[in-house]
Amino acid sequence: MKHGLKMFFQSEENFLCAICQNIFTDPVVLLCSHSFCKNCLQSWWRWKQIQQCPLCMEVNAMSDPPRNLALKNLCENFVMERDQSCSGEAFCSLHAERLKLFCLDHQEPVCVVCRDSKVHRGHSFSPVDEAAKDHREGLKESLNPLRNKLKIFQQVKGNCDQTAEYIKVQARNTEKLIKEQFKKLHKFLEEEEEFRIWALRDEEKKKSRTMKEKIEGLNREIAALSETIRVIENELRADDSLFLQNYKAAVKRVQQRPLLKDPELVSEALINEAKHLGNLSYNIWNKMKTIVSYSPVILDPNSAHPELVLSNDLTGVSNRDTQKLPHNPERFEYHPIVVSSEGFISGAHSWDVEVINEELWSIGVIQESVKKKVQLVSGSFELAYFDGKFVAASPPDPDKFLSLKTKPKKIRVHLDYDKGKLSFFDLQTNTFIHTYTHTFTERLFPFVCTLNKVPVKILPVSL
Image (cartoon, rainbow, N blue to C red; front, side, top):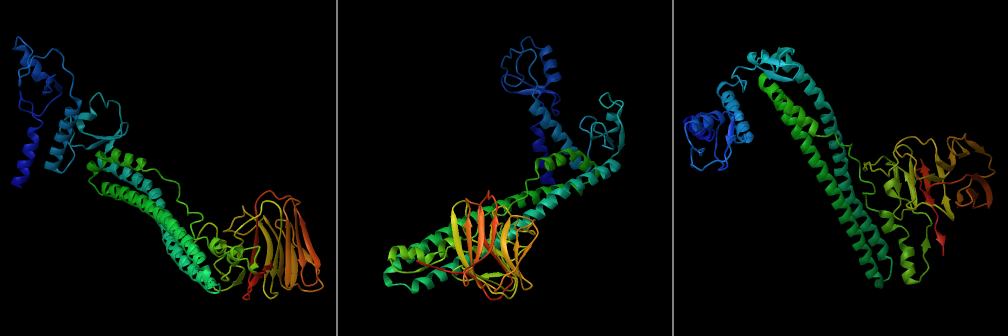
């Protein structure tokens, strides 16, 4: 206690006028940088023939020295904090009276003397306890958006944490598959294998770094929001007068913490497995000059519904139990759909699909702009099978039931983007099934939708 008093009086000495030995009142500063109370200095000079500094005796050329506003504010704050520390209550810095009233016009606590002053003449007042209760409720309400925003950031961070872990799983699985394919090749392909492993690990490193930066950014925002909430909650627990005294600063602090736009998941954050695995043997064939199989469509596992499982070469898909996968923006979550890794914006393209006529399936093309998390209402052109019937479906147009003599097991899909035609053929009987005519205006992606346990496969093309 004695040590605390000693420190208190040492700090008080910094605010004492050298003439009156009291805390500065309306201090002014001379050219020599010394400060004095304005009235004290004028009284001192009235007894002197020369306007000198009372401390260093330097002659001062200004008869009306400028006010030292910084020192004035420091002194007022010191007096206020000293009074509060001694009493545990807030006191008026002008009249040293307890702040028992709250000016509704100026939105600040005042004393009974302030109430009768010119500054507050004609104003409305309320007791500090009533005002504090009202303002506490308002400040509590202003915290709700911050709390909601904090929850959103935490949810997105949780998904980013899951994505970061899944990137590593993808990288390990993709590396394993790459190595299995390379084992089937000749020994001289080791250099090609090493190059592709390097490309995969480099992508993992870059995308992991991107996700790490995203998570760090979310952590910073979460920390900032949490700190703001913590400080405001501390203010809410304070004494009424202290709370009202700091109320403006608390509101300003809340207002200075902008409600940022909801964080978004990082698009294309996952490992691009299609780039590493898709057409792998074909790309190797270009260097080896040997006969290999080639698939014109590679399915993108990052777009696959959680119930879908893709084959190692990304050309087959089956419907299994729901997997725990990241909620990345590219993934379909309403329909059991997977799209190709590449879309078409021009030209003619064909691919063959092997289907199993047991459960529901549909194949065709889908527009890039379709919503992946809700039911499709437009943007798809498909040939579907369900309840033992074949249907041409392109919402919002009504379904068209097709009368086929045989159930096709291998179907060719032919897209002529420039002519605006999408056609389906039965490969086994070489018969026409259906054609869509439409003016395409955006990128189209081949897709597969299936409830079959047996894989629906994109068939290879012989080169």
